[in-house]
Length: 374
Image 1 (spheres, rainbow, N blue to C red):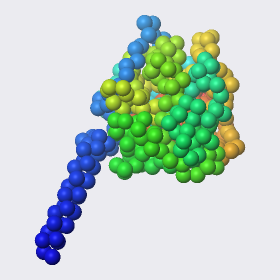
Image 2 (image 1 turned 135 degrees about the horizontal axis):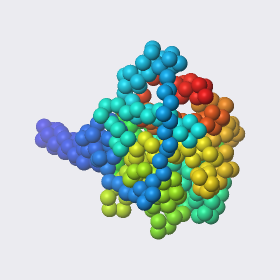
Image 3 (image 1 turned 180 degrees about the vertical axis):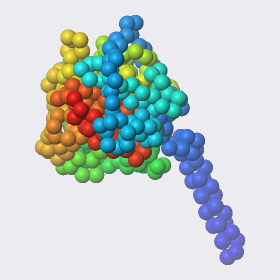
Image 4 (image 1 turned 120 degrees about the horizontal axis):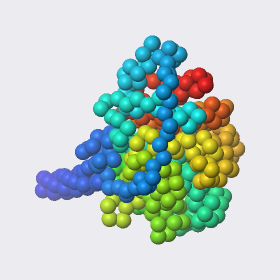
């Protein structure tokens, strides 16, 4: 009996050791332990595809007029720049009437400092989906996603999910959005090295079109649809062609990938760029997709992407990968650590805030207060 107990005990210990070794050999776990929680400097730790600035950059004209934010923003208590610094901002820009009215940097950051976009990349991915529709690479947002992601065809419920369901975050896909949970999907997608394999293992939680649920998996599926529709061109190359070069971005940029060998862009996050170039993305949508007289993206796509709509399970405050702070026509791209591109067409204003965390500030309310000044 004692021999049997020892044998069973040895087997159990062996199984536990096997599980522990397997657990800590996972790329997701290794990266979580090594890098801890997501950080605005994470562009340094992941493989990437580079985006080149065009030969001729377009620069914002700047205003020489003083801008007395400290006197009109109640939260600032008479010192707006201290308020921004105290709330862990690294960049804050205000563009009004296409002119740079305010530009400040903190924490040793400057105009050339790279910051990871986090989920602001979701809005950029949406722009590229619109471009792919415009280029007839994708036929309709009503197409089932299995037209492009064929490996999901035999999985129950995925043939009912359309591209629009992904855009509106109403897909019904099960996805744990926590970056802290090593077994959750968000952590795997962010820290792991095989996103396509993770996609193949997704499952349905409830029927598509039933309700809104913000999950990064939806945007990563949009990225795979883009990749499949582009065929030989990468998503990064498409961003270069459709946005970076036409908008005359001032700086090089990059898009983080899951692995170096045959990597896929993390389209739910992780465009690594500078504040002024993020602002140009807001300016493009401020002008309904028109840039210096050239229609980069269809006006109808911009309108559809940013309008209030509650049909088919959609939430009024979120449309095609853009957040709607109010029902008065403004919209914004937003990242997990307090990255924002706020656009208010009625006031002809774009605001960019980049930071290490959201801290204690109510940024959405602050942006709307600033917009009211104009």
